[in-house]
Length: 479
Image (cartoon, rainbow, N blue to C red; front, side, top):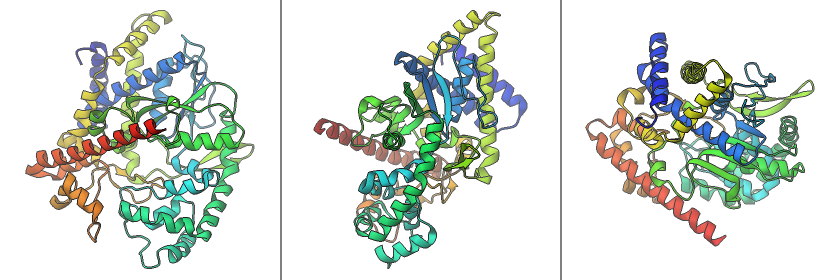
């Protein structure tokens, strides 16, 4: 971090304070202060700069990945004007002393809370979301994605796949083969449509309450990945009469929906058409576990008096303590960062100059080196600390398991390119045992073959992202 000496000094100060408090493991403290805090600061600084350049007057930070991004934006701007949000501890506005905008808001949302009311708007295309692969997807999971109750799911299973156990884990190919029978099943389409329409009015009411139908330039801020959150929101708003385009600023994007306008999606760390090396050494599941919120997933929206509130799932009990410690560490980093700006001088002008200088340093941060070292080649201590967090990659957040799943030598071998390809092409009784953070699993359970397993998993990721990038470019060229 020779290119960023003042940010390094801030990290050292924050690390010393955290070690003195002794409320977290040393590995978690060091990762938070020297990697995660600076990277978060660099990303949010970029977002605010881009928003100012494009004339955005409001930014919506999406739950839950956007919570710490939102808190960092508040720290950077020091909230010259503050209007308390209806949720304790969260302010609705954050106006920079230097600029008249953007206003920063935290928006309760999730893929589940937006995809379900969107289903009836996009018809057959909703099956693309319902029949999406994942780590441990079952037929029951697919029905929950569509909003069906357990009893309704059982009925549909009897019609579509009567000889299959509803809770049996499906391969990607098996999931895709269910798409046609589901499309032909009239009862399934009727139930999915009913559950979608029953959630629609509440979703639109909440979005309207939060100002998304107002005719001002605004944008979303989120982690990113494949851009479907923005697509779902655009469908919902368009159905309510909103005529402006929806834009978003994202940490990274692997791909985009087929019909998406590329100009409305702005990525920072990697983009759909480039950044294979960065993608291969990155873990989006680990990112989501770290950059989370002190509340559970948004399930739906409900009316309370005259206001609309999010209906939140309970935060996983096994994660509560860990999430609390991680948040305290990143909040401590933000506090140290802003205190350092204040100590630059007694005047607001000198503090503003110091903040501007730090933001320029953040633009020179070697983000790839920091993230690749932590995510792709973690130490044993980092793997134990972060790999123990409970995680689910499904929109319903069912079937939680340790982020770095415990895998046998045979299961680790399955993550090499050739064995993995065989399991995908010739699925049998043996299924791929996946891990949210395969690099952490390899470090913890790879033993003397750690380097070989890591090379195999990394080679597969390079091949996967090269294929995705080629497909994206080919699709865009054809369009």
